[in-house]
Length: 471
Image 1 (tube, rainbow, N blue to C red):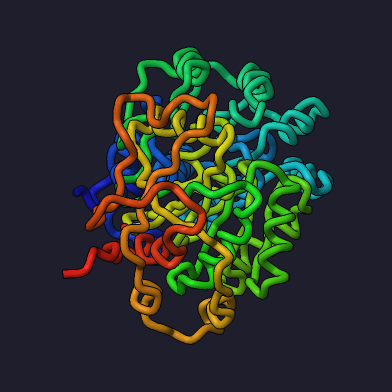
Image 2 (cartoon, rainbow, N blue to C red; image 1 turned 30 degrees about the vertical axis):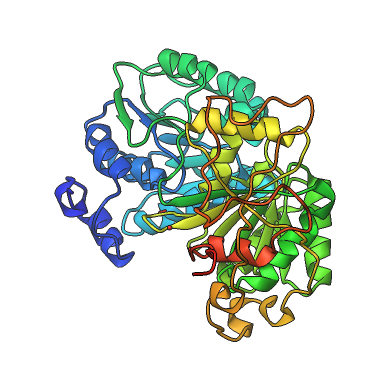
């Protein structure tokens, strides 16, 4: 693979990359940076955690630096605009710009809603070279006359499909209508639904298409599993997992609603599991504090709604738990992309109830063209979890792997039948892959098997037999 030193980047950028410890670009970076440096429009399709931020930030910084930005003659107007859907993403992109552009005399700021606009307006008045923004606040400031795009050279649309999912696409179109037609456009998306495909076709001129993974596929290094469990027992199942599996040391849990996120957080916190929640009702300060605690390891579990699915950039997420399956299958791809980042491996566990979530599961598998492995976990509350494992990793002892301490019972793997009225799952004439068992599993029963086997399977241990896997 091409090294960063071979990508014709300015010495200041090369020095910044070296200071960050980066030597080899990811596939999206290696393919997108060269045409972007030549001024070509780029359509980048890549799943989350592949390094898209550097793929567009480095060419933008180079272009602005070569154009002589940063001088006093640029008192008003913006040379480059990066539009991204969430506050967390905007902040993280701003941090990347600060790191990569440390040796350049470029001015940038980040604007988003949920905070006072006065500091943002003051930064705009002082003059900027690069602006990172979320659509809502940017459109507000544009309507107030605070934003000037007269000298814009580069427009970056990041996470375009997420803009559509979150209902921002109309604001995005209004913003684009105010931009100069003569510009370079870098367009990035994890998936390409029809509306996003149409938008890209209108925005881009003879683009270079870069696709490092097929649209709507999930990372191969993510071990994806599903546990069928009644909705009323999901909180107990999650607590059991955390109590029995010491490897679950940095866990991201997704719920569909803010209320659900709060309930899960309350349940785990009362049981002694350091947990924080992040969703749209939380203040910006609270959300940032929760992210920093999770990143630092002070919080073992972070519970989030889909609004934060692409705003969380934390290395070393060991597990992603879909406490509730999303009714939009693309959101599943975004959620589990928080683990197995930058070449690492990870585990994604879906908790699926006996109702409409069976349909959601079938839709997810149809979109990703991949069947989740069924693991059995019954009698979830039969025994209490080990409380010594509920604290953050730094405060817990280092026991042997859970699979060794809790050997799996014989013949516990089974697939629960679909509820009455719900089509058999999956739809394409097959069954879920199951771990091999020495004998035919017993008929579905809440008394059969043990949750200990789920831990064994999650940890990669084989099931018991009958006697005789950023930037």
